[in-house]
Image (cartoon, rainbow over all chains, first blue to last red; front, side, top):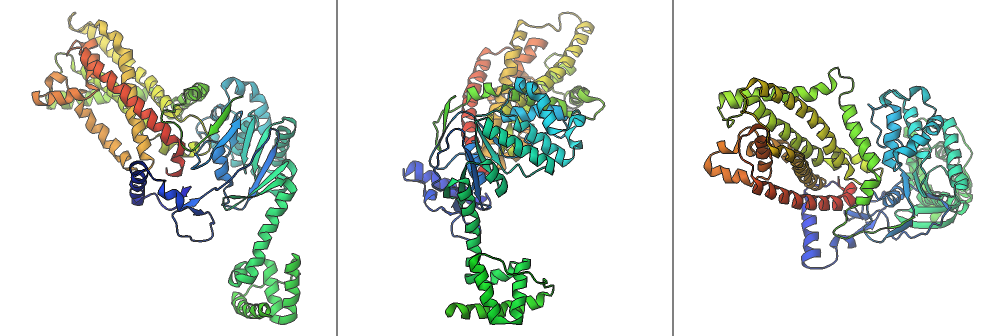
Length: 332
Length: 279
């Protein structure tokens, strides 16, 4: 349960109200009832939303679970709950072993300290003991590839180097459960390959359980054995990776279908090259063009590309015509 | 491998001592970081820890001893003021470090879990090391005075052995009040402004620059209610011979400290669970 808006003078009255209702009158929390679903694109009536609601799933040892979903679906919130950064409003989480979470690369880095000192700092923050870090120091430096800069303050590093160092420390954690949040997209191509390779090692040969959030469908398909799709805070799908990725992609595409028929204004503001081409076609020969385009969309294909338009005025005019024509088509 | 369960409401008394022990390396790292990074790229480095109380003592001698004419109960002025400054400096540092734990560390706390109590504990320990440097300078000036004054004026009491206890009391007082303010500041930031001027005003309510005997009669009881008063008086008695050693006062201070420490750690532990949503 998450409160929107600024934490201002309103909250004192909310707090007092809640304290009065719960402790004195001994009723349920009044604000727990009026939480709404967390759909970020609609305005809604309540100040409280359910960032996550009714999420239940079980992960066995050795599973590599990919958690996918749109922005704002609740993936990072779920990982924060697992990492004990914040606590749930209702329900419980039970786990056996240690959870190490990699939500951001380079947590605890201090710009004035050298690379070596920061390795120790970062490692300790993530839960390694000093002896462990000393033991693995050579491997970490080798993985990061920053040996020359190891004794320079981190503020002198390039941003890519800090990221490499941060990820290298995290890669050598040895927890039973690893929770990773969208960190594999940083660094250059060579490093990304290294990172995904290391994740593969950790997951498949290490026998560890990994929960992996990403928008990179290729990486998810590559690494994960299970897939979970979150949508507006609820669990939409839980199954094999391929099915989950397909569900996620189809769902998003479906939404665009809906946009075309219901929200035609929004369609015109979706300025992609394909749609501008579609609008161009309409100007030339309305009805047959529309029919062929509509068939394309139903099949899930894109219409063929033509020259993109640069004149915005003509776009608006054609948009109106497109609206009119489209509505007639529906009424048929 | 242990099974852990995360639930929304946990028991009232839920302090993670085992977690603190497991993260002791992080505690040392934080102390190291505090000390090493503060004077990077400076020439004088740790010498600045000594210059600040030295100049403050000189100012106090001039203003309070000279202009205002407040007595120092027989002890030489520099020693008297320096004793007060060293201890008070430690208290105010402990308090300031502990009073905005969630605010200053919000970005680290939002990404990683570790027992949050590590941060204020490491803060008071690193300040302890800084205080010891200032204490060394105090001892140097003290030795100078022992040789230059007629013998017998300055003598160290057996109660100097209480010194570690006094330091511990000060640290815990500072930390407990700081933790309470931290926990309240996550939602209502008014407390932050209170800290800044509150500390300055509070210095005048404790016998730092004046001995308790110099306070007017009607205020003496109120000042005696201050749990820090017996600590300062005890320190000045043990090395300068002024004032009295008030065992009752020390006991009162200890009990006060235990109660506030317990409450503050409780409140802190409850706040650390959910503060990321409002800080």
